[in-house]
Amino acid sequence: MIRVLLAEDQSMVREALAALLGLEDDIEVVAQVARGDEVLDAARAHDLDVVLLDIEMPGMTGLDAAALVRRELPALKVVILTTFGRPGYLRRAMESGAEAFLVKDAPASQLADALRRVLRGERVIDPTLAAAALAEGANPLTDRERVVLRASADGSTNAELARALHLSNGTVRNYLSTAIQKTGARNRAEAVRIARDKGWL
Image 1 (cartoon, rainbow, N blue to C red):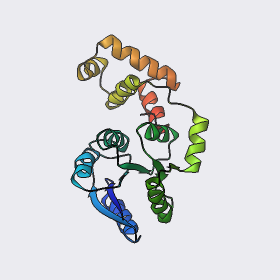
Image 2: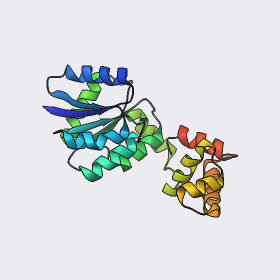
Image 3: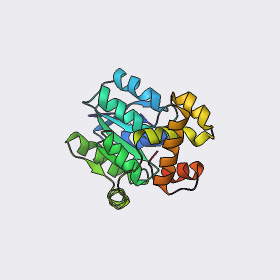
Image 4: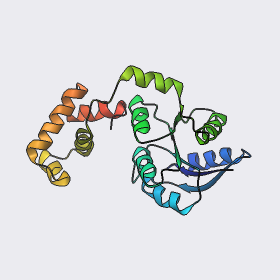
């Protein structure tokens, strides 16, 4: 029996996924959470084989939760299931240690098959996304540039960002300037939008 933790913030989607997976003879959803920052505790509390994660969740993204699970519970397999078929997300999912990356509009049978395949040691990636990721190329933003650009999305001033991130004003300005240049944007708001659209943040 494949024992699964399902992390998805939309209750209707989560319940539908759990019901569909429950129809499989060899799969059991043993736990469900609605927040990314609840994933690790739930994974520790149950005897699991696979953690199935949405990307966009409150508390912590599925990508960050995946990296945390891989670091703290390396025996668990991680599968990312998302609405957002962004090439940058795929690359970040693989970097975080996910064994599979699928989009939600795939048939339920494909998801069940992916769970079986990752337990056999295979890596399962949506082929359309894989091709798009290769065409897109690597994320040009460094980890620090991503952190500063993501933090700037709420319209904070450089001084506010500097205080929140424990950096100097000049360092914040430099990171934002470089991120704007790398995304080909005209300003930080456009840089945030471009980076999000590409799955770089």
